[in-house]
Image (spheres, one colour):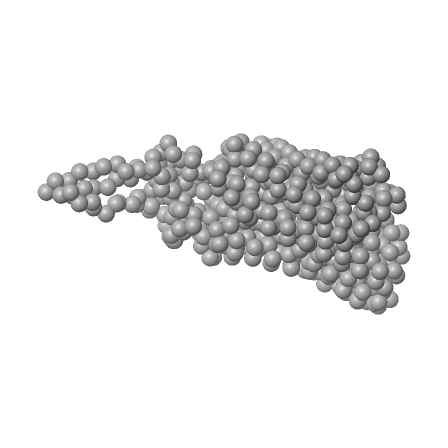
Length: 491
């Protein structure tokens, strides 16, 4: 009997601790050389690595190793649960140890396919969502509740901005988790979804209270009106975030299982349906509570949501994987609220002179902001997977493709706007100026997303928690300024 042993490749074995908030910590990384034996001219079964022996130095072998083949990822995935944390081990088959880098990054062909096939439909959905949100806002502005309580209108822009950003943060965290393999095992995926939903609802409760206080101060209302504004703010924020949180969770999980990168679809879906659902809920809640302004119902509503917030605070603080979020990530939200308020002032002052301008603002800012958040979500996931290494070639190509996608979608919306609103006079000069403005806006959002992600990561901050408010806040203000310039120059 003759036996020969031939080296046929290698497996890169990486042990990564993945927490429910998307933070990954590399624990081990080594190359296991694979070989196959030829006995009397016939191939013997390939011997796979002994995972227990390989993991034993890291004291995870006794914590319950469960394996599951995942052909869509092209690798074997292992999930280990220990002391309430989620740990994943990836065995990546490659031709040789030097090929590791090519396996870790995405090919240019894959990047182009993902961005064109996955991102463009999501952006079109976001445009429909922005148009729908504008229609809903126009309807509820004329309702009895808004006529009796004008401070509700002050609440709208701040509520949509702050609530949208915490939902975008949840989407980017879940997308990172999905790409790191946290949803490979059912129990780990459920834990991650539950933890992020609890955090989202806690943040939504805080946002609702803050928005109610801001509306009461700026609206200079009486004590009875304060209770109504607080009740409307917290009810809309919590109920709206619960609806969008479920939608985002389903989008990320189902998209990942279908082979779609959640980074490409999560944030556009969250932003498009978030504003529209919040405004629908606001119309219903405000009508009901304003009619009860002289009863105890507004106070009881605030008290009920306050008790819910206290309960959520205890739950999140008890989860050591998520507790640090209770006191972090609020400075970017303040920045977004301030810059969006400045944008609102600009639009309000220009609306009297250019009545057609306000209708263009949500879509210009929405599409530009969405390509920025998609790009930032992809960068954040890449930084987590690559341990902080920035893959410049992949991200440069992503910037070019996203910018090329942005322009035709903007032009398509402008054409539809002209069909349904002939009052907007589109001349050749306006078309050129609008195209330049939207291109500058889109490019700026991509640059902001890229630079902010790298800046945050270099200083120990998770981009999933902080980058989106910087993009949306800057985008809202810059979009308003650029559109104002277009109308001033052309008209």
